[in-house]
Image (tube, rainbow, N blue to C red; front, top):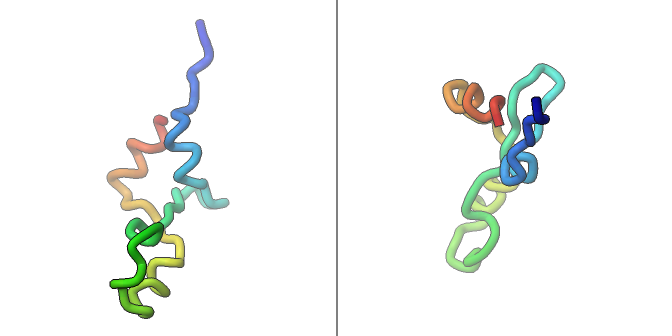
Length: 61
């Protein structure tokens, strides 16, 4: 039986924590930053966790 390949897009976007949760970056922080407030840009810097229903789908990737 062949090996199951990891989804290339998923491995670039998500990281697993030590407890098995999936970490992700915030969207809207890559370009067109001039019209966004400093507070909004600062809050987008931090990583966050993927929601539980979606993490089950991502763990299969």
